[in-house]
Image (tube, rainbow, N blue to C red; front, side):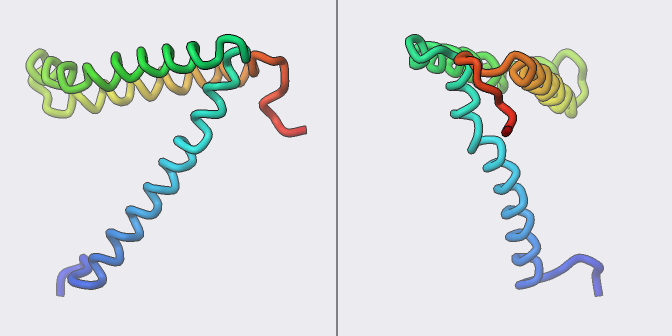
Length: 113
């Protein structure tokens, strides 16, 4: 008998993995709108959120297929898009550290009292 699950057990394992990944994604996507909106004063919040979100999605999401193809062509390494993802994750971590240090635009603390 193989060591990996088959049939219904395999579907249950896949479902469990999907649930765990969904929780991780929800933890990120659930707080993103509130953290992003707190970075701008009320007077310019709509424009600031829309502009920053649109630019970041265009640069890092829209050009991702082109960048992945270019990286593979330049390096010959089929795993080179993973390095691109790691670099963008590092940029995200740096941005989160700056946000945590600076705090929201209205002067309130991001940490609970």
